[in-house]
Length: 271
View 1: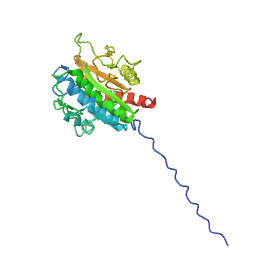
View 2: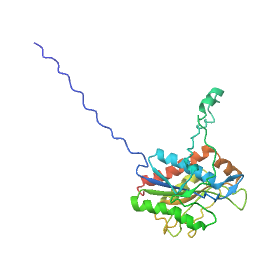
View 3: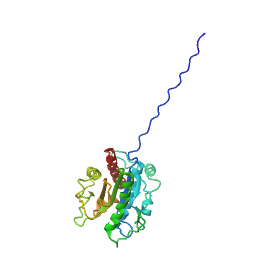
View 4: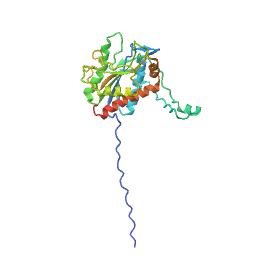
């Protein structure tokens, strides 16, 4: 009599552990320049504060997708206006889309209009008033970096976002990074942003301008976070730079460059 064939039990499936996102456990503190009664620089009918707050909101969306915890140094309705990522432009060699295809490519909800952040207040609740001493507010912005550094060392990054103007030639264009020259050397975050800006053609003809005295957000006395920098993203007195700054595609591209710089610091295990 034949023995019944024993059914083999299926081998247990191995649990595949998912790798954490690139910026897991990293705190990114974003400092959008100006706001309140201080519009910052202005050119061509647009203010620096309008651009920095929108860039801050865009950068927040990008780093959140990478697993970061985001905090702002200020509060404003402009930061709560979620920017919508535009569709990617087709490659030059690609065939031209039909009208129906173009319609499908359009985002269902267009990017909200730029908002002047006149309601901006510091994280402490104090109103931003340009009639007061500006360095005082820079120091107050840096306080949040000091607080998080003490709580959750060493996973903290501090980025202050600005747009520059030039009193020289209208051909002056591009961005640059700034840090405190009392530090032994530029932080890795500064070096990464500068390198990536250069590769992307964003540095233009502007040179790096570290200033040790009046930048409270980069001053180690007020902001002990090692990986911190102030970024002048573009020169809005230049017509081409101003057009870019108003283009959501440009903002998302720059936000990704800043996020990639933070990821590089994480991979190097310095944050």
